[in-house]
Length: 250
Image 1 (cartoon, rainbow, N blue to C red):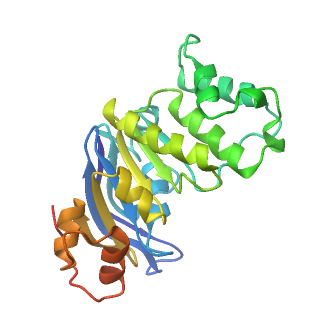
Image 2: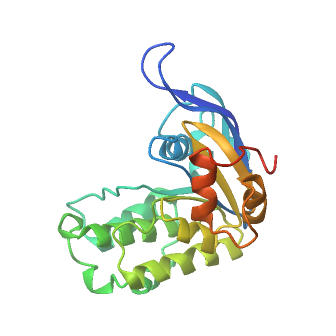
């Protein structure tokens, strides 16, 4: 469902710094890939390129078989992105923002938007202007909008930022439920506990390049870490250079 093949992205003039270099990975339906790495590793660049917000310098990106650059509308119809900093239309109410999203994606009027609002404790805010929402409320609204058209591919960039404990628990459940329904998901987060709890595979980036990819057990093996090692322990062994860098899976 999500295909990244030889993706590279450089900023600035020709020969400028590479944000991502020759990155390849795939995410199948019901798979949850955790994309982790230090600041500047290329995580957000990769997600924005998949969402069609950035043009790749090299390689190709596909959603459901559609090339994001050459067939953007078809690709985006199957996709939803929750960015690290959601910026809703401030002069729309919460209800109007959901309605705008429904119309943009051609979703039936029968879709139960109220159920999404209730799940994220936004029902009481339905008639409030988005510009008046707190950071956490904006995050919840962004998630509701992303789920509205039941995307086949879901990209989440720091999805827990600003969420209260209830919202955090609901977000974890939403990720698992979407995967059970067949959605291919990429979760980019510095909160390694979230990645460890919900993701089926992990891809660690460093300075724009893949360090390792695989299940948690495969990533542990690549780091020469014990069978009970946490993802945090594995992450520091690989990223700080205390363990071998290897690709656990193709």
